[in-house]
Length: 355
Image (tube, rainbow, N blue to C red; front, side, top):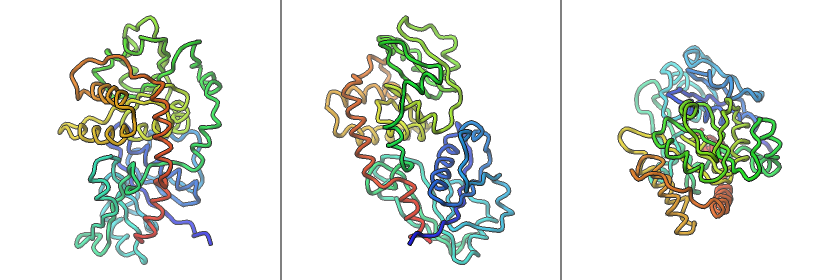
């Protein structure tokens, strides 16, 4: 027999760049598509005006964070995203609820070794408003001993049926004969000036998402074989389609990083830079896992390019690695990831074990 739908409370604070709310919205949308009831509590829902404009599934309520302090009902599952601290009054109601809700801290994505060790750990609340409850830690990841990656039902089938030329034409972004298509979604990056001649070594149409990179390009001198087009803010499904339509994707942060892997295309990741340098080992850990089955020469070429693009190697950017073998590797990597149970499927099972 099918289990009855559960009520989920998802809490998200927007720190910067809207990456956190992007992941929280994907989670809410995926849960709702599986028949779950979701309340998304956030301190800044402004990005959803463009991120979610393609339609909001039934079963989702987006509510101001502050209103949660007066909420009388507590869901069956409470998810705090990325260690955001829940309002004390809401935690008090969680502690009084019978049965107690499953309390889950959804952590940031990493390929580092601590993820497998930490996934599923429990933190009993021995004092404070949540005394008597137990919080469990859920770590997304790339191996069977982690929580997996967000992958909506039917995602890969939708991509297989996708008509890239028709979609690009509808965006007014059709390539000329012989042009490769590259997408760019980045933070403020001092290596952008070096990227232009690298891309301009072959006929290239560069499709640029809103942000600092697009602002800089508006006044940059371009090589003869490189042209670019500014893109609007896309909904999440259309951003996926952008990645599917390109030959190479330059992405940033966490959400677009994951979507680039599901696109099955060569990609370059700009990791979120941290002042203490913690992003360096995090980048290296992923490259070690991602390139484990790649040809040694190609693997070194991608490592070199990624390190330079992320400012971890002072040498200038040189030619792009060969995209032909990279396409084959990207397809193999995606197939390997698809063997895992997706994140929401694992999260639902995790919640049933935690409740």
